[in-house]
Length: 278
Image (cartoon, rainbow, N blue to C red; front, side, top):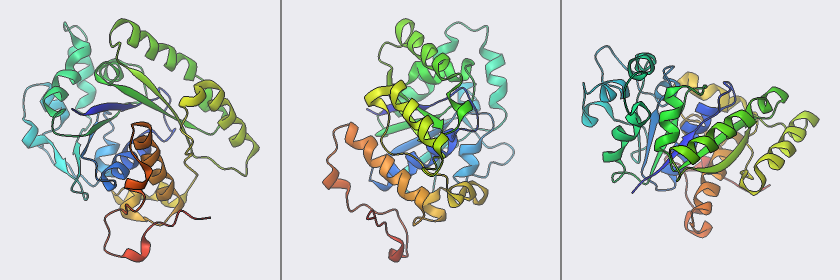
């Protein structure tokens, strides 16, 4: 059965969708069957993986509204082990439609339940808010990863988000685990970045991921070309960092490093394979 992981932070612009896309793709490169669920009405995870939705195409909104099937909605990406359940701005209406509904917090859980036996991991890209959509994601998740931008304002609101997560764990989803924080847009040359990283370690303790995601131009450019960073420039620092994050993610779940050490993203030019040396 799949482990469901929410990538969530109430603050926008912290690298949430970038992390969802590239962690999912990195895991697929490590021979894991992954479904990326775009649960943000902006649909950035959908477009960022090259899914071009046309009028009438089925999305997660249609599944939630019983107007479509899994076979109509789920799309395969450029990596055969990574599928995406797409979203568009129609999803914004779902929050309004379910607000008065009994069991409104279980809508996404009911959608994903039949899919759990088809994948190893289901990763949810949440909207940058603590509304009903994010609540739905956390209610159906086994764990939550919180990307944190290495800047001052990124720490604001973090305590509130974690407190809300613990309340969901206590009252609705006792299996929910705080998997930890991931420092994003990190520049080791800046004192502020190092200070924020230190604060994140204090906040999350041993749960914080040791792999920090650097500021990287190629990483920022990749969504504009509707690609993961692994497809856009697999040799860049951003790709190497997300590959290391995917390995660390698996090691936490009992995988042996040696089994994945030689894994290389799908590509035809083998000269672009990773070099994890200096």
